[in-house]
Length: 100
Image 1 (cartoon, helix red, strand yellow):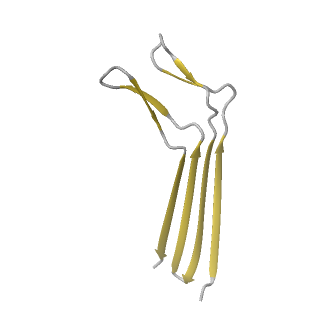
Image 2 (cartoon, rainbow, N blue to C red):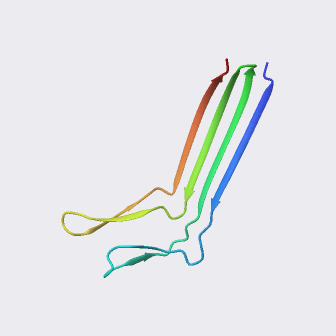
C-alpha cells in the first residue's frame, strides 16, 4: 500500500544587470552582445514511498537561457563562424531508493 508522497520544486531566476553587455573579439574590431541575459532553472521531483525502506522517484529539470554563450571561431578560409549554445535543456530521471 502506498503510504507517503513527497513533491518538491525549486525555481532559480537570474535577471540581467543594468546595462549588462558582453564584449568579445580583438580590440580593433570589438563587438558587443546586447541581448538580455535571463536564465531560469526549474527543478522538480515526485517521490512515492512504496514500503518503509523503498522509494520510487521521478525528477524533471528545465534550464532556459535567453542568451546562451556565443563564440566566434575563424575557419580555414579566414571567415568567422558563430557557435551558439542551446536555449532550452530538459532532463528527466527515474530513481529507486532502498534504505537498509
